[in-house]
Image 1 (cartoon, helix red, strand yellow):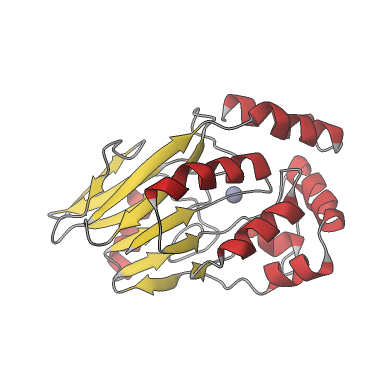
Image 2: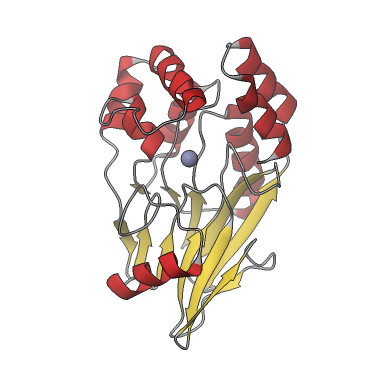
Length: 245
Ligand code: ZN
C-alpha cells in the first residue's frame, strides 16, 4: 500500500494543488491527513472541498481546525493567527465548519504499528522539536512509526538500538524502515513551511517497500500570497510563504 501523507495545509489552495499534481504520477492508495486544514491561507473553503474529495482514510484535527470550528477558544493564539481565525470563520460554509468539527482528536492508529497525530501522540498540541520530547513519546507509546505535523518543520526522529537521532530534513532518498527501529516522521507543511524551504512538503509511505519517501514541490507562491493581501489578512502571513519561516 502507498499512502499520501499530508499535513498543515492551512487554506493554501495553490500549494495543495501542486502537491496533488506532483504526487499523482507517484501513485497512492490512501490519503492520511495530520491536521490544520485551514487558518492563515486565503482559500479555506476550497481547501476543505479538495481534501474532502480525496476522502482521507485517516485524519486528525489540528489546533487551527479546533479554534476555527469553535471547539476551542483562540486565547492561546497570537494576534495574526487570531485575525486569520475570524476571517476564516466568515469564509467557510456551515457544511465545512461541520466537517472541521467532526475531525477526531489524535492520535489515530492508521495501520498496525503506524499512528497519525497532529503535534505529538501524547498531546495533540505539543510541538515535537527536540530529542527529549521525542523520547517521551517513544517511552509512553507503542507505535513503530508515527506521522506528526504542527511544527511545519520536515524532520524525522529515529530510535535505533536505544539511541534517538534527528534528521532535518528527512533523507532525500527516503527513510528506510529497518527492523526494530522506531520513527516519528514529520512530512512538513503543505501550505506554510517554516523550515527555510518555502516549497510545499509531503510524504508517501510505501508499506511494501518499507520506506517513507519525502518530497518538496515548488508552487505558485506569488498567487497564494497575493490572495492573502487581497483578503486583508495580516501581510506577514503572505511574507512567510515567500521566506518559508
Ligand atoms: Zn499548522
